[in-house]
Length: 298
Image (cartoon, rainbow, N blue to C red):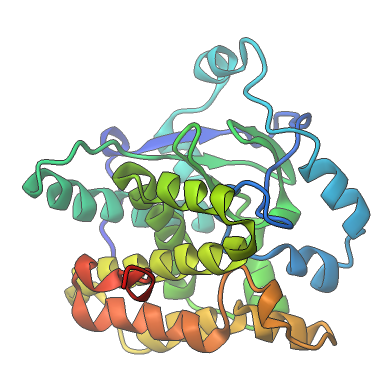
């Protein structure tokens, strides 16, 4: 995807690389609990692909949401690098910032045209571990969005893992990662995330199903962004994005880990579902076509 280089004044970037993270837990929709911050990668990747200990991960994630440490934001602002410096550390960082800039330019005017308040999310880079408004950030979680601080959290090492361990390569596949998490920001601004969280609290039996619909909508929003920048797409981009959506489908992750896919355990959707909703956004270019909750309203 041929994206313009970001304007440092038009993106919000925080760089925790080189800082020590830790503390706090990270809430996920487990067993009908509260809806956690949206992640593009299910915990199955950590358990089955990266061979992490699930008991340790669950213990860390259920330890409490936790907020930023006292004075942490000030330390980052005073001692951190500038957006321009952070975004140009390496190719992966630059690509991520370019995608973020394009997403801001695409969604900002759409919100303005609908007379809805818009706020740009902050892209937080970290390495292995970091800190978010939702608690600890750890590489095993994959990229995620935290609604508490409206931040997208990314360890760019994930891109290498996407290509080498998940079979999802290509720049557009990486752009899709940022666009999906940005989709969760759109849901947060529109109040969709809060509505889903309330529904989950009232009906714990539908928690996973609601989580899946939220994730699929974020996939569709990622497709809408790409469609509205269709002139920037290059041959093979759509195929790259759809392949990435397939590789991170819950059923594919389970099969690759030697597990039998269990639909009741899905939290992000099957490969077919993720590809279908990404494609719907790509083909329609219309955010109104991304109502993954439509049949529940009847």
